[in-house]
Length: 254
Image (cartoon, rainbow, N blue to C red):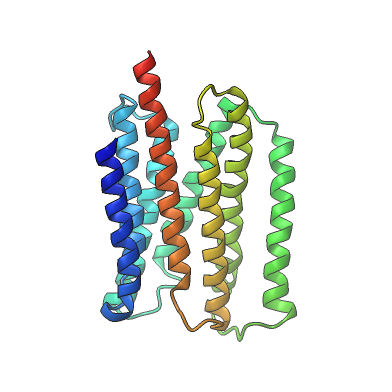
């Protein structure tokens, strides 16, 4: 576990250093490629620790792995379009992979509810509440105060609204499952759900900044959102290490 923590910390430091170095080396989306890549490594480690192989992983582990494989691929494509081809990567095929990753992650949360058995009405009411809040903020920003000079396609505008909405699923799912697992767990592994929710929160901030900046160019730092994406990936990595830690405890107690 100590070696795993050292590897994670090393990759985290490198990803942050690459973020600040990109202004000199060019933009290749390196921080997000590194941070999402280390999360994939942690997922493989979790699968191994749980006693499964790639051919035997359960559905929840499969959805988690596929989600981050999609996000890693999207981050690499985004960097390739920007750094190598020197073209605007938004929207592009990278967005297909980003959205597919969100779909797999939501399928993961949905599958887990068969175990946690949370009433669907609670989830729906929370989703509607946060959805209306997010939509209101975006609508006010984009249409009422005219913070944009929109020249893109309708797809651009749809993605500006879609990404934050997907982030809300992660935020709400993390919070709901935290309270549910806190009731039934004898250890503190439920803390990982708060970290997952925090990951969704940082993704939400990043996507809002990215979307509004794409429409209006309100910040001179074109890649400020990458800092929030990077933090989100690393927080989810910490959540996975928390799961691995308590999984080892369970196995030693058996």
